[in-house]
Amino acid sequence: MNGRTSRRGVWLAWAVQALLVLAVLAGAVWVVHHALEVLRARGVRSGFDFLTEPAGFSISEGWLDFDASQPFRRAFLAGLINTVRAAVPAAIFSVVLGTLIGIGRLAPHVLLRGICTAYVELVRNVPLLVQLLMLAFAMANLLPDPTEPVRLLPGVWLSKGGLSVPWPMMGEGGLHFELPERGDFGVSGGASLSPEYVTIVAGLSLYSAAFVAEIVRAGILSVPQGQVLAGQALGLSPVQQLRIVVLPQALRVIVPSLTNQLLSLTKNSSLAVAVGYPELVSVANTTIGTNGRAFECIAIIMAVYLLLSLVISFGMNRYNARVALRGWR
Image 1 (tube, rainbow, N blue to C red):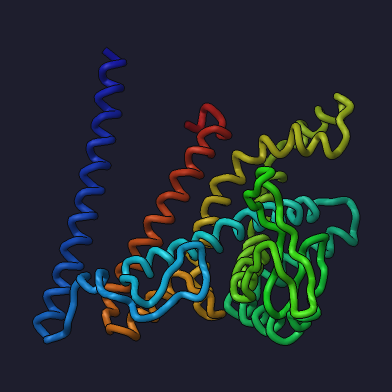
Image 2: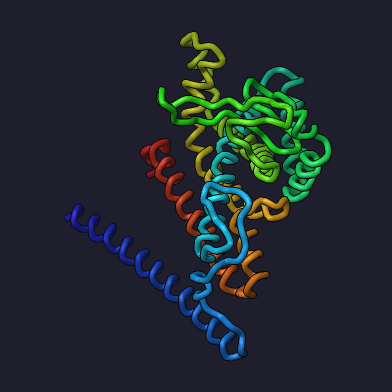
């Protein structure tokens, strides 16, 4: 009897949630329909029919080829792909860098701890937009010309023209990496990343890393000291204690807060419009300037970012369920 009651409770909970979702969707559809009707009544051309019309503008970069003769819907798709193209590597870099900084803030070495603390306090308290503008200024004015790039690593070159990195290529011998090479007129070969793309990825990574560092630090401090002492008693080195004992338990605290930070990073990618990177908001702004469909373009932006946030939340919640304590499920 208890099993049947429990199953009924689960099904009832799912039914209530489904009804709530349907109600929210119905409300959103009504709001959009009502807004379009009001615009038409005022003589303003409205509707989403423009998505099938030729865009009349091109997009400078991205994985999806796009030219002025293609429709607006493809332009928005190209902008979405560019948004993901910037947000995903920025999320990876910010998690790696933030984890290292968070661990560094707990290091016994005073100098290392001070540097990590100074980084967190500086970056967290300066607006992201200001940091992006400073990075864009540095890329345009402080770096050498494309004919005299700086070699950061073997096959990695940086200049005002952007960043050149090795890139996998298919050849007769199978998959291999094509290395960029410096020539008389610049760097050729490999993958060339534009200054705007480098600016937004670096800006998002450095900014979010400061918040990730605090999340990691709080997660590590949440692990009882007895667990660390147990690792010491087993003869584990400090690195082994951190990797085997502390971090696996800290993940239960880190992951929920990290989810919020990744959501914030994805939404902050919309600031790429300030540095000229053609992501979703930039495409929408150009579209508004072309045909004046402001309401429709803003609605598309809202829907896309909502969808991205739901996908990230779903994935992180699934991962959180794997690392959470059984009693928390």
